[in-house]
Amino acid sequence: MMFSYRLFKQGNDVLLAISDSAIIGKTLRKDDVEIEVSEAFYSGESCDETAAIELIQKATIVNAIGKEVINLMLKKRFIEKDKIMEIEGVPHAQIITIR
Image 1: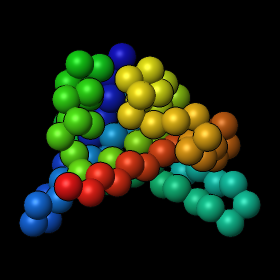
Image 2 (image 1 turned 45 degrees about the horizontal axis):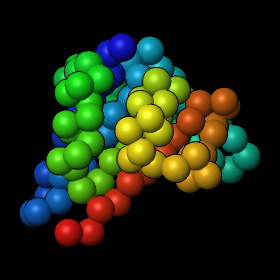
Image 3 (image 1 turned 90 degrees about the horizontal axis):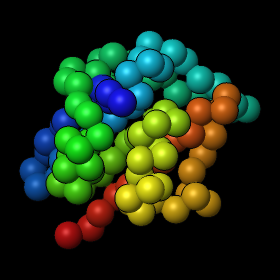
């Protein structure tokens, strides 16, 4: 499985925006929430599961969207099921780590 991602660094913080590659370019809506899975935010580099795990571990903020990446994060216990938001059936989660 391949993921698309982009890293943003500000001071000591590292934001990882990561998505299933298949949903790049889609706009998802649910009620008053709209998320654009834009190439500008979620794409730039590609990685496999092993690299995704390393990126998630090193990031202080993670913004993740897509069934495959969220399933990986659940499997590795980075997130809990009740913290996932679904938009048009696509799971989305965020992690903020205070160090």
